[in-house]
Length: 313
Length: 254
Image (tube, rainbow over all chains, first blue to last red; front, side, top):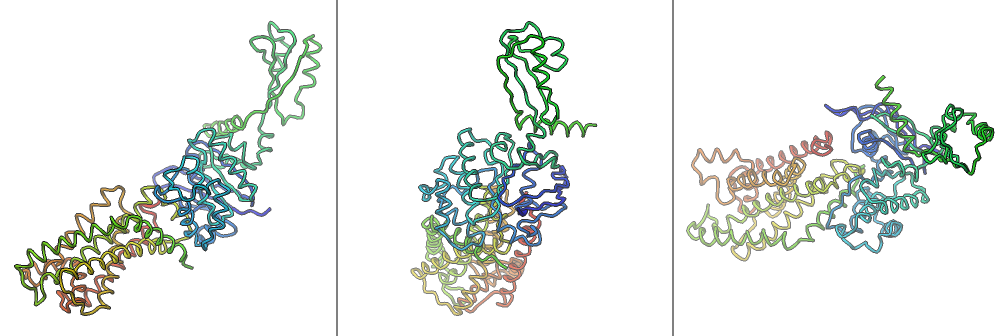
C-alpha cells in the first residue's frame, strides 16, 4: 500500500514558545486509520495543523498524495478534509448551504447528489434545511464532518473528535468513523482518550513533548508492550501466601481466595506451566484461572513515564 | 491557477447573508439619505441657493453617495472577515486551496457590491427630491466601483486587524466618517479659506469625492487624474498590506 502522507524530519519552534514538534517523521498509508495519542500540549494538534496548512513548520517537509504542502499546496490541500476540535459553525446557515459553501471553497463543481449521499451517510439529510444553531452537539459534530467530506477528500483529519462529549455521543462518533473506514477514507485522529484509539485505530502513534515516541500497529503495540495479569481462583482460602509463591511475585487477595500473577507476553517462558505445577505440589487446589490484557492506557502511561525518566536522567 | 470556485463561493455566501437581512441592510441607509435631503436639501439648502451654479440639493448627491459607499464598504468589508474570525470558522478559509487573492477577492467584491447597490438606491431616492444630471456616466460608475473596492479593502484590513467588536467599530466611527465629512461631502473645498482649503487637500477622501462630483457636474476641487491616482494608490497599498497579513499570518493564524 502506498503512503498518502509522508512527514519527514518535521519540526516547529514557536517564537518565544516551546518546541512544539521535534524532528517528527512518519508515513501514513492510504485507507489507514491512525490515532495520534499524547497528553495536552504534546504536539498532536501542531502536527495536524502543519499538514493542513494552518501552521508553518520551522523545518522538514510534508507531502500529501505526493504533493509538497508548501510548494504544491493547492494540490495537497484538495486531498485533505479537516474536522477541528472546537465546534465552529455559522449559526444562521442551513446544513445544506454550509456544506455547499465548503465544497465551493475547494473549487469543486456543485454536486448536490454527492452532498446528499454525504448527508445521508451521516444521518443529516432530514436536517438539511435546519439552521446549524438548531442542532444538537452530536449533529453539529456530524455537520463538521460533512463539511470536511464535502469535496471528497482522500484524507480526513479529526482533531480530538470526541473531546468534551458524553459517552453516548462518543460511541456515535465511533460509528461514523467506522463507516468512513468502510468507505476507504484515510483517517488521522488525535485523541487523549485511549479507549478511542484502541477502538478505532489500525496504527497508533504516541507523541510527547513534540517527539514521536513510536508508531506501531495497534495489535503489535499491545503485544509488545502489553502485560497480562493471571488470576488464580482457589477452592479453599489461604491464610497467607506461601513463601515459594511470594518469591515468584504472586500476591494473595484479602479474602485469600485469589492469587494474582503479572507476566510479560514477550517472554519466551511466562512461567505459567511451572507455576501451576508448583501449586499442585503445594496442595493448593485451583478452581479456575483467568487472564486480563493490560489496557492501552497502561501501555501509554508506561511509554510516557519511561520517556520522562530518560529525560530526567 | 486561481481557484475561481472559492471566489464565487465566498462571494455568494456573503451576498446570501446580505439578502437574508435585506430590509435591515437597505432601510437604514435609505432612511438616512432621506433625512439628509430633508435637512440639508430642503431646510439648509433653501438658504444656500447654489454652489458654483449647482442647486445645493443636487450638489450634495455625490457626497451623500460617497458617504454611504465609504461607510458601507468599510463596514461590510470588515464585518465579512471578522465574523469568521469571531465564530472560529476562519480555519476553513486557511486550510482550503485558496490563497490570499481568492479570499480577499471573494469578501471584498461582495462588500463592494453591497455598497454599490445601496449607492444606486440612494441615487434613485435622490431623484424624488432633486433633479440630478450625470455629466460623465462612465466615470461615475468607474469612480463608484473603484472607491467601493478601495474602501472594502480598507474594511477587510480592519476586520483582519480587529480583535473585538469595539475595534471593529472604532476606525469607521473615529476615522472614516470624519474624513468623509471633512472631505467635502456637503461643500466644495473652494468654499473654505485658503489655509483650510490647503489642509482639506491633505484628506485623501476629498480626492475621491471630488472625482465623483466631477463625473456628475463636470466640476472638481482637484484634477480628476489626481483623484484616479489617489484611489489607485489606496487600492495598491491595501492589497500590499493584505498580502503581507496573509503571508505572515498576523492576527490570522495566531
